[in-house]
Image (cartoon, rainbow, N blue to C red; front, top):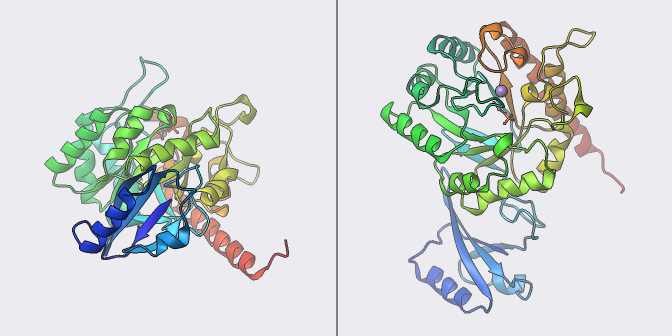
Length: 373
Ligand code: PEP
Ligand code: MN
């Protein structure tokens, strides 16, 4: 059960202490306080853990400082959508809104290779009105002999260039807690010119110790990629690990499933799950068409499969698109064959705009149609 408190409720005021005193006397119930600092207000929630079945919602609503009460099911307690659950489905980070009601594009390099390519990429993004990007510094690779990413070495120039071109959020995968420290350090040393969304890759979706460590910090939001060989429920529970430790600024990423059934695509595209994740949870949903499709093939009409699946995800309500671009794909150190080129960037963004407009039209149509079922 979650008690959502009134805006002015905070530890120290008599009503709050009175409430906590009452809760501490409930048999078999422990509490966990969660505070969420938004732009204008601080939202405090109290999680009641234990035998909450015996508690009456109306009784709890009458307690001091309590604005509303949500009875949560066992599943996805923090990030789930529960009955009569009016908690937000969005968050803000570094001036950018991430929500189930909007769309952000993260076009960029799969892996940082050199400062020249980073700058060319970022300049193109800024010329096309973009404020977010993807830049991999730590790359988990199948072979130990493949390029593993430049790591901490490249962070200063990546962050400085992001500041120069007005980029607010960089999605960057980490595979170890030390990477989070290196990112924090480099941001401090460069004067915080940009923000970072920590990405947990598909190979680490169930790295529970990493999830707990990333969940315990609230500075960076997190993009959690779905595990490529586990059920959706297992991946949603992985997201819940982050939130249960305190960080609920989580975006859930669909990136395709590993199976030969998806051939000739690199992974079997799973964007049909966009509405499922939005229905079951309050997380914005990201799609990664590049790692799903993995090649630059086109349909007979001339549209690339990567663009087709991007449109499919957006038509189904996706809130973020993570997509690989490269100034010279043949020279990319990682995933060149799936990278779009910079002259395709305005075309890609226009295709995205058309798909989002169609999604909005579909929502209006749905709202005008009252189902009898
Ligand atoms: C990536 O986004 O660069 C990546 C490696 O993704 P995934 O974890 O989905 O394979
Ligand atoms: Mn990649």
